[in-house]
Image 1 (cartoon, rainbow, N blue to C red):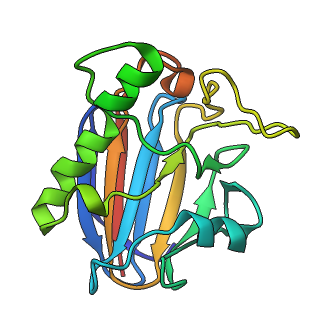
Image 2: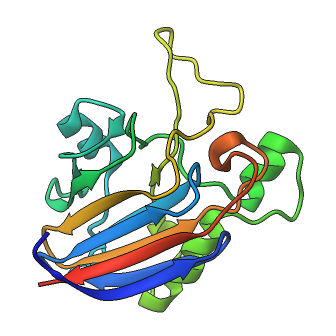
Length: 205
């Protein structure tokens, strides 16, 4: 990665990050302590109606878990980001979506527990986007096993396989609005019960 560090920010659990990546630049997400879920969305910065599309991404990858070499495709079937580096074993979840106050109530009987959907809404509000613009997202460093008969774990998630210092690096294939929620979830194993901080780095040419 022959680029210079342009931005580095530590994101506490329950907080979010957003920014526009210029074509050819890199976004690195570092799991500082391991087993921390990171929810991720992206949009074409030149046409915000075009956004990450899980089905196109899964079909192209031929796998419900993405890893090094996977391309994040839009609903127009255009490449948005390529996962060019990944130190995490087992890949990253594309199917379980984000937590929210509503899903925490539905799944765990916990009230007044906002999650990543609320973080996404906060980040997207800076770009005139809102509820209808949130689509099924990627969960970096998250493990969602699916068995041969189609069932998942009772909690959907299992403990993540990342360790301290694991990271993913994404390269922008066009100008891309990227949105990150550092997941605050404590009701399932996606954060091993203890949400921790992450670091976000942007490298530009």
